[in-house]
Image (cartoon, rainbow, N blue to C red):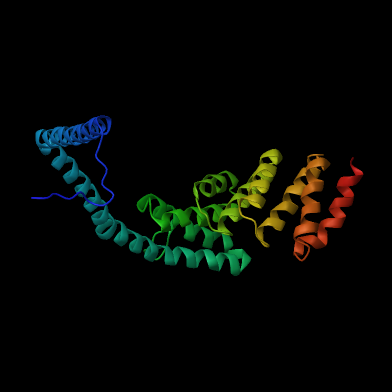
Length: 256
């Protein structure tokens, strides 16, 4: 019976056959190594299965615990604290907008409570870790500032933490005002500059740049005051503070 070779078929020489055998051997070695590695991994998993399942269970427990804490403890606490804040905020707003002769008593009620409701101080003490307690630090700080109790104002405003565009700078500026009233002018300057630069906006930035400049002039630091005043002129020319720049700028330049 006749045999036929496929078209294009070329018999392998001995070198090519040896190379193919070597390739097949190398491939087999790779698969054997992978099989051995997989077997060792399976053995390790089998030997440590109890610990692995324990770790997975612990992670799941932590996640469930956190979600449960948020849902059943933190959220109700936040709501309760916010409800308690309402009356204290009302006293505070009345003090800001009402009759000047009643201001101190209204600020006192805002701080210490009235009509069976907590004031800011009790909210801070009883609802620590809530947004309401953090905001209570802000209100308490300004209540004390307006009552001329400057150390207390610094303490509470310093405890207030916020990324808000306006409240954060105002709290820092309030600390600056308290230091200024205590004749700690260097510290006041530091906080006015922080307040001006922590969040850049058309309201708080020129407000505290001007306060920083005036404070720097009082410290005989025209080199500090002038850049602040020039910045108001260049960047915030439409602000209320821009109308006062030229007077203070002339004063600072005369000091050089």
